[in-house]
Image 1 (cartoon, rainbow, N blue to C red):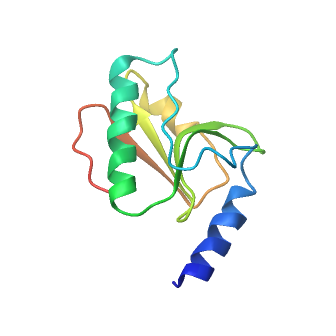
Image 2 (image 1 turned 90 degrees about the vertical axis):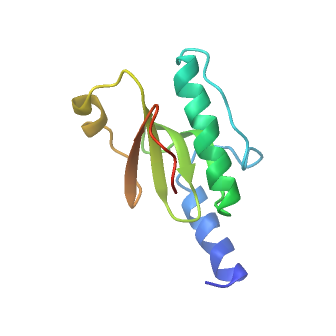
Amino acid sequence: MNQLERQATINRNADKIKGYRKDWNCVKFNAASTDDHELMKAAVCLQACKKGFTFLTEAEFKEGGRADIYLVDVDFVIEILCSETQERFDAKKYPVKKIIPIRVGDEVNL
């Protein structure tokens, strides 16, 4: 995919999000989450950045739901699981191609 195609994909996927036009590749922290959850989110975002992905954190979708991390250029959501049950994770719905769970403590390998 060339740069023009990549940017067109990013723009198309960004239309799914409420706002956030200025928060590209910035880690937003949520004080309501545990420290372990937020540190894992930061570690995943660092790996995403190193791999060349464009990401948003705490991304709110127009159709509902807030994702821990949204990889805009590939249309994937990454959810960091800490104390969350599998059932709660399975209930999450986002208008994306794929939802990837990463449990706190797992090795990050994007």
